[in-house]
Length: 446
Image (cartoon, rainbow, N blue to C red; front, side, top):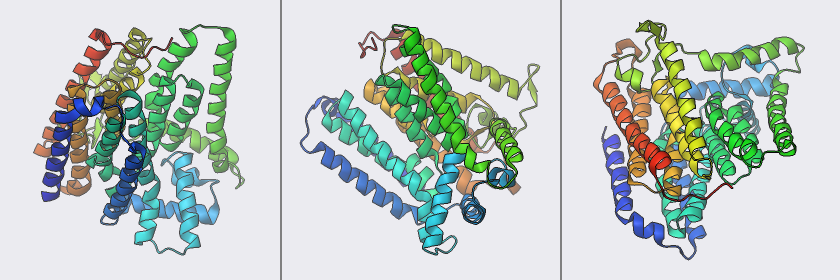
């Protein structure tokens, strides 16, 4: 508990100091050796993350990864999904496979410190790469100094440190892919964005949640901007190439053991299961449903004649419509994609069903980038607050969850859920104000 209090006070102090001096920092265009300081922050952050990663690991997930490593090294990829069923998409499994090769080459003992750090490394490295991305975007839209400071703010983010360093999860990998996707769309490099989006899905099934963002990019830059058949078919075939790349990544898991048809059927089923598994209103996501005391409550119960699952589906449809309408309202904007993506994932987390605690994670860097491209104190508060709420949510699930004495209406669950909703409302207020009422000019797409 002391650790949580000190972390909270430290992060609030850092964000408060930045908010006080934000204007002068953002307007200071030049900073000598800004790239050097950024790299220094990145290296230091990586060192701190590795240092922190040695103090704890979650034995359940790590045990699964180690078991998969052994199986992949012994039997190869073919039939992996048939044996283990629903787990993670191919690129994630490839990372586990390569980690297993390294572990076997150096004869690392199971659950040894070096092996645990090896498994955590891809996510930790992606955290640092995201820090560098913050610098790049901050420098582009604000100033050299702002880029360095914002890189530091993300490096000090406790939710990021906890997710990758303590828990050892891989959310930062697909999150980086989503950030790259949004950046490429904003830079009018839509065809590269297709592959970034494909990579996000190949790392984590839930990447499909961001499909409306890529649809908005296609509407803006292919359909509404100087439409012609040559450009349309060019994008069409590049998009097909991204889909073909996704299919190719699955082939090692299909062919090689004489059961190709069965393996292919298992993989196809796994994508459907990924979207419908854990049929509960909330799966440890402290959101709207958890606030009502419905965490781990079946999604088939009814409210006003509709099941919670039906209400979750309606919420998804409304979220997608709002996202596309917002994009259309600002069709000349090049920077809207970050805030639209943040809105989609955060709203899905709060109001859709079957959400896990870590599904809010991508919203955190996306909100910070939305702040970079259009600074607002509300975005800064939302970034800080949702960081702490996600940190509390994940820490409570990892350290305090007790299935034998579980109370879905416990104070931490209700209070964190309510806090997340309030902070999301602040983000939405800024989202609506910026996209529907702001007259501040933006970099045009046309």
